Image (cartoon, rainbow, N blue to C red; front, side):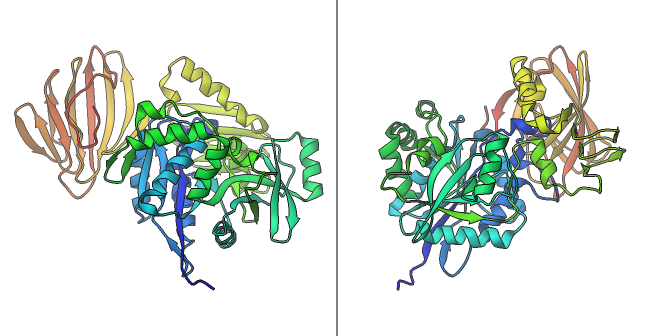
Length: 481
C-alpha cells in the first residue's frame, strides 16, 4: 500500500455578487465578505474549514482563490486576518460563471507538471458541524484520488424548493450519481424527502485537476479552448494572476453543473457522491439567513440594535441605527446606512427585482454602500448636498492614497486621530490630531499614514462636481489608473 501523500489544493470560488442579500450585500462588497453572525465573514469561515483538511495523509497547499478583480484586496486582507496567505488569487476580469472559474484553477494547478486534487467550494456557505464537514471532505478526496469526480450532497431535513437535487443509486463502492434535477415544486420536494435517495446539491466538488480538463475536452471544448487562450496571456503580480481580458470575454458563461456534471451520468466518467450532514446552508437569500440564525421563543432573529414586539418568525438586521418592529409575522427587515429592505420572508429571493431596477436607473445603492472599502482603508460619505460632501476617511498604518488631483473640487482635511503625511503641491507636511489643511482645486496631493495606528480624518469637499470619477492619478501603489 502506497504511503505517498495525496496532493490537495483548496479552491475557493469568491466571485459572486450576492444580489439576493441586498441591501447588505452589494456588487462592491458582496455577501461572501460580510460578517452575518459572529466575527468572521463567510469567506473567512470557508478558508478556515478548508484549512482543517490538513492531515498526515494529505499534502495540503495554500488555497487558490478565484474572484473578481475589484475584490482582490478584500481577499488578501480577510485571509490575513485569519493568519492565512493564499497560494494564488486568480482574478476574473468579468464574470463568466463557475465552469470557467474552475477551469482557471485547474490550469493553474497543472502548471509545472503537478496534478493535485481540487477541493472546490463556494465562499458563501455556512456549516455548523466542522468535524463532520472535514470527515466528509476527506472521504471525498480519497475517492477523487482514484479518478472519480466527487460531489458533496447535503442530507435534506425539509422539503426545500430553493435547491437543486442529486438523485443517487447505491453500488458496490458507495453512492453513485444517477441524475441531477432542477429546483422542484413543494409536492415534488416532499416526494424527494420521503424517497430518501435525493440530496441537495451543495455546489462543492472534489476532483483531480486533469479530470476536470478531460471532462471539458469531452463536453465543452469551447470553454476549455477560450479559457486556455486567456490563461496563455496571463499577467502575474505577486499573488495576483490576471488572465487576458479580451480573451476571457470570449469564454462562454456556464455553470459547473451544466457544463460537465449533468452530462456525466450514463457515461464512463465516474461520478460519486459523499453525503454531508453537517448543518450546511447556502445563504442565497434572507430566508436562508433566518433559517440559520439564533431565534427567540417566537421564532424571531435579529442582528444589531433591534427591538421586536408582538412579532413571529421575523428577521431584523440593523446596521447603523435602532430598528423597532411591532406586529410582524414572517417578515424580513434589513437596515443599512443608505437603504432599508422590507420583504415577505418567503419572497425574499425576489429582492433581485429591486436590485435590477437600481442597476437600470444607475443608482449608487446598486453597487456600493455609503461606507466604501478601498485597499488603503475606507471612506464613509456622512453628508452631502449641493456643491458639498463630507467624508470620514480611515487609512491603514503604512498605507497611502494615490498621488492625485481633481478638476472640479477643493478639499479641507481635518485629522481626528493618528498622524497624516500630506503632499500638498510642492510641500510635504505632517499633521496630528485637531490639525488641518486645505487642498485647492487642481492641486496635486496625497494622503498617507506613516504611523502604526489607523489614521482618521474628516474631508470636506466643495465644488461644482463631486463624483468619484473626478480624479487624475499620477502614482498609485495599487495599480489603479
